Length: 114
Length: 117
Image 1: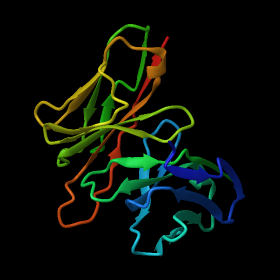
Image 2 (image 1 turned 180 degrees about the vertical axis):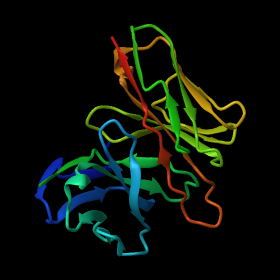
Image 3 (image 1 turned 90 degrees about the vertical axis):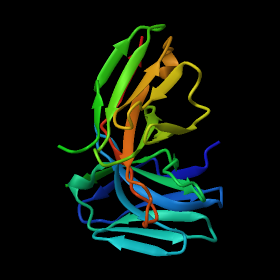
């Protein structure tokens, strides 16, 4: 049972363009939505995260947009760079879970062409 | 480097053999997690330790899997009688307590890639 659905599976963006990755969740009992970036041969690294009481969060070139009613959230990478080429995972944590038991999406492989 | 360290990086074993992986978390982190990642998928939660206590285990963690964190520092994950379906990347992560903040981020190691032949 996939509780967090992520799309697209892969994405090619030109340098300087905007990369957009979408996630949808089925369980309303999630209260924390992080995005992780993973390079080949490395573990995932936290990129940015949002709580459901906020509709948008921006950190540098990375923005999360959150739509609670639609149960959707997305990652926007502005001015995409070749160094952003990686696999991106959205995730969600259940409410009242006092530790990081995360449910991950299936990942989006991003390629930023020079 | 003060990140999460995992050993070995790669392990190839024959079906039916036992394997053990080690994780050294960031020193001040009292929370430690094991996740499993198969090819083309996101990580899946396996188990969670707070200090030396194992507080949560996923149903993915069959009886052949055992994890320990005896002194609340490093952790080991053992798989007995390995099966080809156990082939995956085993990721360890650590974090600080939630404390006054809302969520303390997970810091992942670079994983141990297990191949069962």
